[in-house]
Image (cartoon, rainbow, N blue to C red; front, side, top):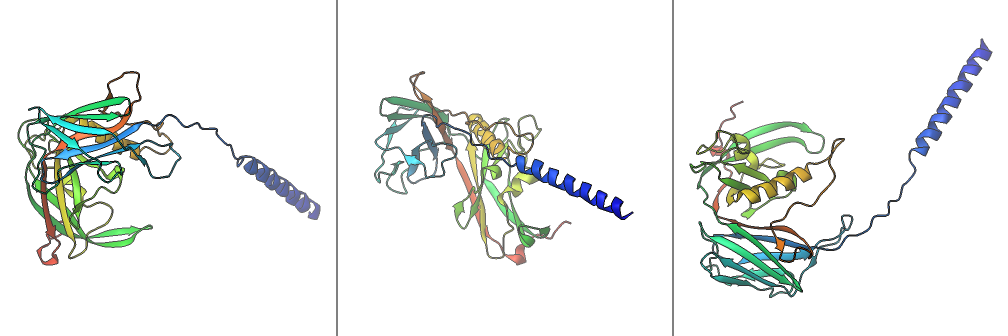
Length: 309
């Protein structure tokens, strides 16, 4: 009996040793020789109907695995021309790749109903993009409800306020919007995955939401990763955008959420900035225009709505 036990123990040890060898072989490091592609112009150009300076940021793309700050594009000629023929010149005064139009808070570029064309001359390349500035509804109010959320390993128990805004989509199918939380007076989009966009008063085309109050998930999208505390400054900016901008932002959000077993290969988001030379270098980024509606408030526990749950 003792010999049988010893034989059994030897077999178990052998299986364990074999498993260790197999597992170790699965941990071999494979070095992939990845080459860097050519750099491209990256355009971050969103103009609004709000008074004050407008900024267009130009940088160069970098390798996917490069964590360094993007290199600014200097010495470019940047203009925006409206459908009335008025030309707005943007200048990189600070030499940091941020091209600015307007010197005072009284200067206004964007106007609802107008179309705009961006032109960028960078070395031998000429890039153009077009957009229009569409209507936006007013934000009627911001309300908040006290909530106690379940325990989360990365955050622990949460207790605070969920904020939401109320606004009604303008009647007439096909309006699209970008909803940005305003925290401590500044519009904030911390993560690409948290980009909030709407088609009429819902998420996408085809929903019977024209002319209605924005649905609750969109209203509450101004509460992102954490609940608000008493005394916090919270608000919303509602930006009108074109259908093309809606699809661009939707692709960014989808790429940010792209992961797991069935993830698709990472790809550049289609840009509306086009090189005049079909054989020239392409560009990344987007040129858009927005009318902006805004409202902010301070969280007052005495004015919080009762929890419906």
